[in-house]
Amino acid sequence: MSTPHRVVCQAVPDLPAASWTNAWRVGNEVVMSGMTGHPATREATLAGQPLGAYAQTLVVLHKLEALVQAAGGHRHNILKTVVYLTDIGDKDEVGRARRDFFGAHFPCSTLVEVRALVFAELKVEIDAWARLDVDLREAQTMPSIQVVMAPGN
Image (cartoon, rainbow, N blue to C red; front, side, top):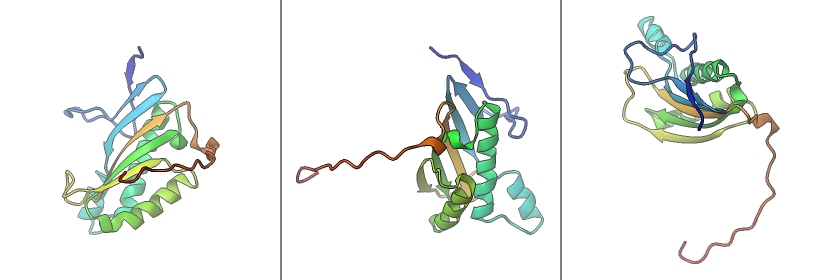
């Protein structure tokens, strides 16, 4: 059995009164809680320059990267994300931010629309899983296999 280790990250510290942990490392796996652009989003909103979905997504992806780095890895160890949007119409901006951040090496992803996030100015929240022994830049495409579905499936 692997011993879990709390990931301590100066750039994304656990909040003292929080009832969650930002990230755990168990063996080569890193599991990260949902991250948002807060407090940058709050500061920008108060300054009269709210951050759009593209900018918020980049802030969040950099937080996830900082957590993976604190666990001993890098952005291309991220294998799966779940993206929560308050407006599904922002999906193209989120996709553009993901392309700019990950380049040609995308993790698996789920995208869902939610009614609201914890603060009104938030548009995007992302949680993620990473494996430190996997680098998506080294991924290979599997040969195509023809699958025949039975009628009614």
